[in-house]
Amino acid sequence: MNIGMMWLDDDQNRSLEEKVQRAADYYRQKYGKKPNVCFVNDGAIAEKLKVDKVDVLPAGHVRPQHLWIGIQ
Image: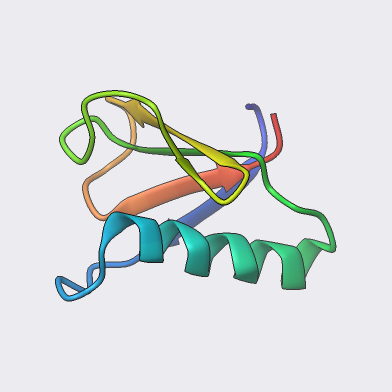
C-alpha cells in the first residue's frame, strides 16, 4: 500500500479489533471507500488477522498504537 491513513488509538480499554473497526468506519466516512488492509506494529499481532473485511497485518515500520489503513 502506497497511500493510506495513519490512525492513532492508544486507548488501553479497546481491543485491536475495535480499534481497526473504528479506523475503518472513519476511513469510509472520510474517503467514501472501504479499506481492505490495515498494518499494525508487529508487537500487536504475530500473524494476519481479519476484522470485518479488512486484512490486519503486522509491520515493523508502524509505530505502537498506530494503524496504517487503506486500500491495497
